[in-house]
Length: 114
Image (tube, rainbow, N blue to C red; front, side):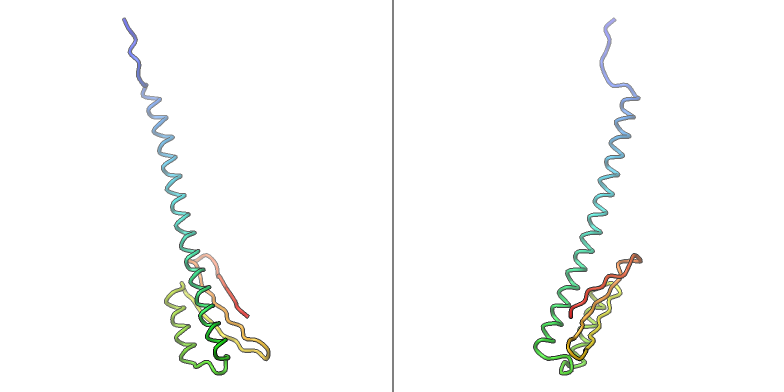
């Protein structure tokens, strides 16, 4: 009697297990890359907001900057950044502009311009 070739049930189960682990790993990798993409986007938005207000400060020094312009900038930060807060502190020689926001429940991010 001739032997018929093919796969055994054990070989099929082993290959299915390996394939399922590979698919789960790819899903986790995609999830992590989306998290990194979001974090990069938020950081880019924060840098743009700092640049916008610093250009305003160069045009008009901090004492001359209207409070409604600062409030408008702070409200934009609250909308664009997760739990975002912006501050402008004027010293004797320089002005410090800082932004802070939270990524989920992880940790505080802060960017400052002096």
